[in-house]
Length: 341
Image (tube, rainbow, N blue to C red; front, top):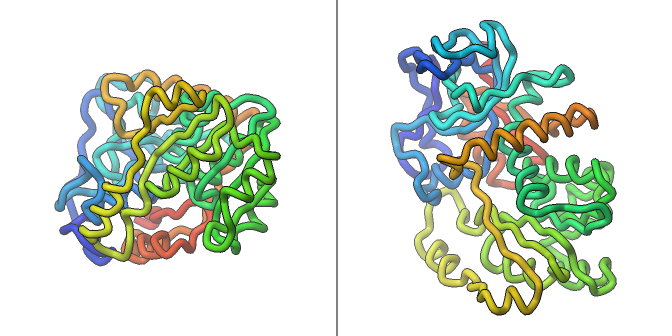
């Protein structure tokens, strides 16, 4: 099989294609002939040695795929050879084959293409669990999405539009027209505008009910300041650690030391909540993810939702794909294409 390997920590060019032995599924796994693999910002951080507990050199990066089942373990009952599926894999998805635990395999919705399907698992599960499991997003709430033009951001917009939600999105200005077409009520250019003032003016000084924020320490402080009563801030990444192509220790140290400290008495007095989310850290509690996937698929089918795919790159061009995302050129999801193998 063809696989994109993290040969060492560093810039995008450390990603190299190698020929590896074919995989054999365990008793509760299916093997998927991969058509597309989704790229997530976490993999860029892992490549730069910025992801705690992340893949080490010699590993295959990636956590989500779409494709066709071509082999199954002996205990697998609910799938068949030839089924089109998508799913989460902990063993690396930047590869022409992936073995996936049966509990992490998702049958393809009838309206999905395999290309769309690879843009679904990580981003939509992440958005759904933050918004509805942790965030308890309700009708008529105001919802702030930082990085609204990314994979999780565009998924969150679509999911929010299934309810009567006021949506505020921060992004570069070139994405604003696309965000408005998707249904965002208020777009803010984080490069030029005063985010605090724009939000408080838009909400008549009340603040917002739910915020999802992958940006970093300075932004988390801002987000906390615009929460309404019973508002919730959910942190799911720290993009400020990524400056340039490689790990910069001084940047990382400055970011870590500037992280806010939330005091329980202040949270109580202000009726605010701060939470964290990490899809890769549910070991022993996988049933919670499975429950959310079932609810999410119903929501997708009932509302005919389709993932936003910005661009797909040949697996041979994985370095270009990483660089494209780091340069903030994408609107929606970026994929690696293995379909020709």
